[in-house]
Amino acid sequence: MKTRYLPLSLLLTALLHPIGVSSLSASTRYEGEQEGERRWTTNFSLQTDWHLSETKQGSASPLSGITYLDGVLRSKLFEVGLRLEEKRHPLPGREEEKGWGLPYFYLRGRYAGVDLTLGDIYEQFGSGLLFRSYEDRFLGLDNAVRGARINYTYGELLRLKSLVGQQRHFFDRGTRLFARDRGYLAGGDLELSLEQFVPSLTSVGGSLQLGAGYLYKHEAEDALTLQRAGGLYDLRQPVGTSAWSARGGLSLPTFSLQLEYAHKDYDPNRTNGFIFRPGSAAMLTASYLWGRSSLFVGARRSENFDFRSDRLAEGNALRLNFLQPFTKQQTYTLAALYPYASQANGEWTFQGSLDTSIADPSVGRKVKRTNIKLYGSLAMGLRRSWLLPEGATDPLAPQLMGSDGYTTDFFGMKDLLFREVGIEVSRRVSSSYSFVASYINQAYNQRLIEGHATRGDIIHSHIFIYDGRHRLSRRVTLRTELQYLQTRQAEGDWLYGGVECSILPHFILSASDLWNVGTLRTHYYMLAASGSWTRHSVRLSYGRTRAGINCSGGICRFMPETHGLYLSYQFAL
Image 1 (spheres, helix red, strand yellow):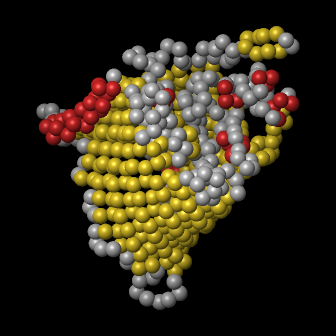
Image 2: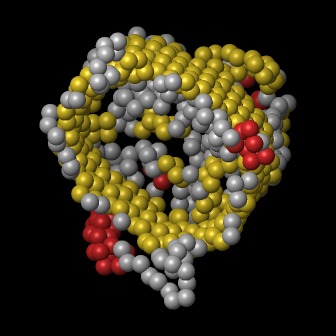
Image 3: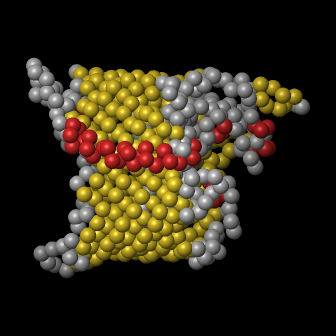
């Protein structure tokens, strides 16, 4: 097995470039067709990531990796696509993805406003509050729907979407088109653009949208039992669950307002303890622009809205909808050390940010400005009145199974989940030097979010960040990064330092160290070199990564500690 594993993925890398040179860049024309309809274009891409571990873990191979090979053939009217995935020895923390094959393929046709797709589909209704199927390779997520989709567009007035099919769950289908032991989903979405009926709105470049969506999932009953009064009883489960949403949006040159509400019928599942209570989610966002400043505010409430196509699924598997994050998506290492994941089963979240630019008082030809960003977010749990006392200490207690679970009022809040307040200052001091400086105050309820805690349930941290860019020459730029996180909880204080040298047009060299100066006294260092040439991009690194939670767009997963060599290669044609 080991002797056959490495050559297969390396063979894909070796073969792709010759294929691209000989045939993929060619276009095919057919006599009698219009110019825009007779040209075929082809796109291929390869992404492969490898890890050679220095630490042996049982019988597992020290070499692990994942490879994606995508191909698309398209014209004006037709499109064919497929993806080959090789994950027989997946990267650490992604063991459930193990397998290989062609899990994604489709045939698509477009004509006169009608868009028909057969195969695997990525789609979204509105903001995704009701339904979203998408791929996130960083987290290993892919919930594409295999089936059929018909979209219809009527000018600028109407957009209609409809689909039916079955979600992907890693490689559980094997060589079959569908998994026999899982159900299916069907739904539709309608969006109207009504600004053309309001002349005063179109005259200022505004827009007005109304939309509504519906989603239905069907799955067979599972063998679930509950204990009552000393006896065992079968739990009757709904084989079908419906959900719907309504939304509206108003946009002006300086102001926008978006609101959306979604509701689903009772849906007993593993994540809510198999209770029979409807779920809902409501979201409101607004933004305002004036001069060189902008203001954004938003709020969302979700209750029992973990919506999946399989009632026994957990983690990030088989999600039907997406709750967009209402916290700043941090990119700096220590600011993202304790990230917040959206709590679909119960939260009130609030977010606000103010961006402004202040000019220097000095008068000159080139006005220098300092950019300032103030932001904050707050997430609170819902105040619940449990129908059985067990829920107060364990929401998934077996005694709650089959009941309505709890009652709550719309504005009731209890228990801090996450709080963040920050300021970010950036300035270009000269043509060769600019910087970003930040301070962040965070409170992270580790007990409620992760289910465990060290030295206190809530981690209170102060985070200081400096990011400087020095242009040494026309081709060479040096970036330095210093970060410090102070806390008395969890593992204590952290330091981070990094340096990155960019050499145009091809190379980037970097070195970094994440150092716990609290209870662990551990270094997590990383040395890396990367380069890009035409359609090729490669990155080679060596070091150690910390075990922790990685997030992307409010969706998170735990990743184990790793130590060794890392190789990433990408090719696009």
